[in-house]
Length: 111
Length: 113
Image 1 (cartoon, rainbow over the protein chains, first blue to last red):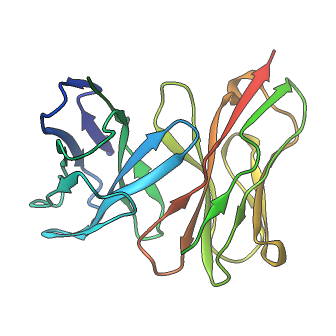
Image 2 (image 1 turned 90 degrees about the vertical axis):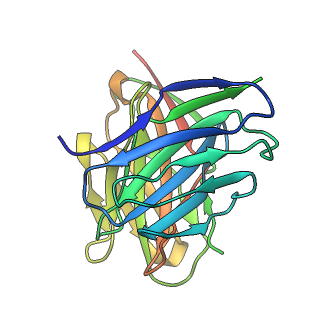
């Protein structure tokens, strides 16, 4: 069963701690993306990667970091530098027709 | 940079009413257009997409959208909504050859039985 998996579904952290969100895909897609979804703001692009060992900043990359060591995996680290980290985070991959496929998301709460 | 506008933030309709959700984009070149839907508690999933050809595209669950290039619009329609259409709907635009997909702010649709 192909798709995108994100874990965990809910994540709670104290302010000042870094936290890493997992994203795995078995769709054999080269391109992967991280978005942040906030109420009334739609989806905003954090980082994307077109190929292994390469990634680019999206529109709101400050306070986040990523790695792409394997085609299947694109983890996102929310660092303590991110001023407003509490949000719903979505991971996606893209096929050759530019359609994006989304994971179930991780809801991060930082207190 | 391209932008996408969805002017309807929250739409409330009764079952069997007709639906039209607006989507306008700002880029003048060749674009790929998408509508995604997020049902409560579910993944964001594709409703329909337009790349080229017939500007009237049909998607899943009876939805359709019309690309009007002169108006930079890609409005979503459904002739008769059901309670199960309650969801959040996002319009998205990809500039041809660009990696990024730009999303609108979304329209929350509530269907009253």
